[in-house]
Amino acid sequence: MDEEEIKYFVRVRNTDLDGTKAVHIALTGIKGIGPHTSRTITALAGVDPHAVLGKLDDGSVERIANAVETYTEQVPDWMVNRQKDVYTGEVRHLLGPDLTMMNDDDVNRMRKMRSYRGIRHETGQKVRGQRTKSTGRTGTTVGVKRKKD
Image 1: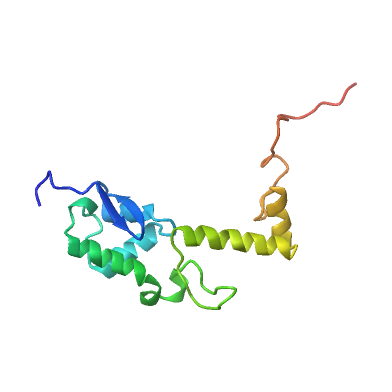
Image 2 (image 1 turned 90 degrees about the vertical axis):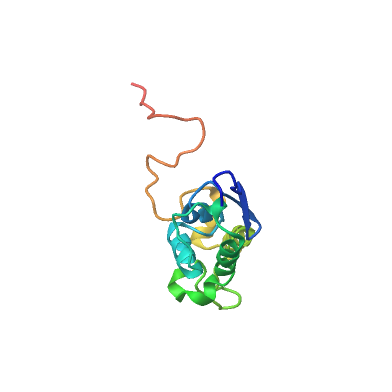
């Protein structure tokens, strides 16, 4: 391909990826794919991770799309983002809007069962055990109030 022939948008898994970036960086544009997962996908597809995505031929892009679709079957269980689904018990790797929807469902399930984490989500407080004495404050109050003499 010539220097002028570059696809500025490459469509993979219903997401427009930036064709001017390297393959391993452009793949992180899909929600649910981070740096480590994108490197693994490029290795599974047999594509140079540092190649510019818009300059790849259609066969390479097709191999990348196929590797994204079959990622769960090709990697060990510890490399997926949903190792044991609550409802089905199967190993899955969620991408895009599926990931957002499942995350919201998990939070709503915790709220319904009135678990500690669910209550913290409901009230908008920190969930993962962070300290809250001085951080995580909301509202207009800033600083420390002094006692009147």
